[in-house]
Length: 242
Length: 226
Image (tube, rainbow over all chains, first blue to last red; front, top):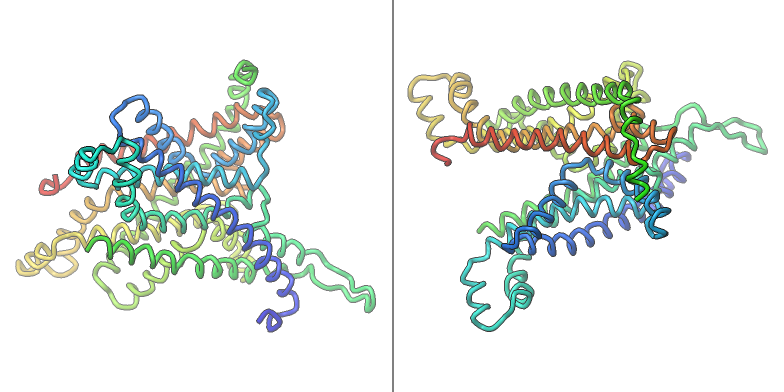
């Protein structure tokens, strides 16, 4: 299919589809996974009555949901390395891609925590009481009885979150991670540099960087990824209401 | 912690003019974007809710296109793609900036207003028609005031997002707050001072707006829904 494209487009499309899509999926996949694990844990803890824990988790949610994600990513990418010198923890010197993944996960886990709290609280109190009567402790009660039911209700928000995380994974472009948008940007940059053919001495490129076609294609690509997922989220939501 | 001990308030104070200028640009772009998103959302939301032929379908396509693509890609398409398309589409960066956040907010707001208008019980509209109101009058006097109040929380959430999205304009070198702070950070390496300014300003703006939602929700809640 790629060889039907005009000659300038092939290397650009190849780079976007192989390097870009791969990195976007790595960023989005890891972030969704981390958001789910941390979010479900925090959201469940948010339902217990102990005030200091609740206050701590509340501030976590309000801060990471309140900040623009790009600012969170900057805090991780520029701020943490200064602490690395101080505390002698080299792991704080995050790579660009890790800063992006962590930033997205902080935001995503805050969203999931809020959704989990609602889902856990929507499980009838009798379920808690019955499992307590059967001898389950707090952890056993939640792991075996409450969360399996709550997770079903969490499915639609999780799918919407995945769409949001896939779209926001483009923020990694600002740090220069070669995900879809950055690979496209490099494509336009390469096309804006004129090249001289060593045999014919013909000058090629440099006139048009094809930014409209390339970013238009990226737009379509993201639409093709997101649209089925938003439909799925809407479908799940409808099915769960009934 | 030497990081905390080295925190230099006077550095922020010395650069207050640049930072204030950045904040002003952030607020200006946000204000135009929010006003535009309000107008787009209200018009297209009404068209969607009343299933006005052609406009309703076009609005639906617009909403799906914008909601299913990253805003950063939309920004790139506007800033770098449009000027390549035609000479007539060359504008100043500032124009593209508010256009980008406005188009994004408008799409989300269309959905908010559509949902709000559709939540107005059909019998109110029917009653208005029975009383001899024209369709336009019925919309302006009945559906609009009630639907507007129903959709208020979700529209304000969209405005908060519009404001937060202006931070992404740093990717195309619009000298708004984020861009200004990053510029200073990369010249003087006063990392935490600048990160603090960014975090504190955005959180203050976001929390103030969400506080406003809660206040409005309580004051404007419809009597029967409380």
